[in-house]
Image (cartoon, rainbow, N blue to C red):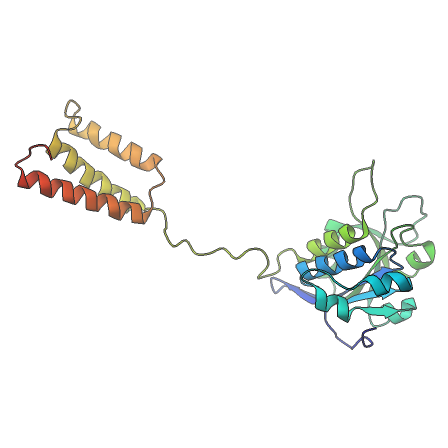
Length: 262
């Protein structure tokens, strides 16, 4: 078992510098070690690191030994045996529920509404509770929550897998976090600019004139056709440089041969 919770521990997150909050994910009596590992991995995916497991079944807890990419998070997870121990330092306790067959006596938020709710608070410390795969959160736990959270799902299958529910909540809370998502590499070969294209148009027109290509068209029409095609093509700046080189070489050879075929 990991050390007790520390004041202001891990799990904080900041969205675009606008709001900061602390989140602890609390799994209540999970029954499948794979779900604990998958939940830990989902937390790591979205930048959360504080995991508590309330009243874990001993065999399940012993078997939870790995989560790809989140091994440290699993090792640091706390096994606790009372709700106050799990959430005592949190200002908001929020229970996830489908609301099915429950008489809900607390305000109910839909998951997309949660970030806006938190934004109105000042650096809130929250605990998100998720019930066991078999029963969800019982009324005894729901009654200890400040408010309840539901994830919009289809009516034919409203209940989500435990780890999937954790992933959905972590994703929603992390949206907009700086540094998330794949890093977009700066384009090393940018698209040709409008000026690049016009230079190509002029150079191509010079070559067309020198070779008599499309000479049945007026010069302005030839230029229009050249520009139309170049604008249709995805010409990169390196492409433009190569084409200019080809045009220069061809014009040079034509001058050497007096305009004869190369």
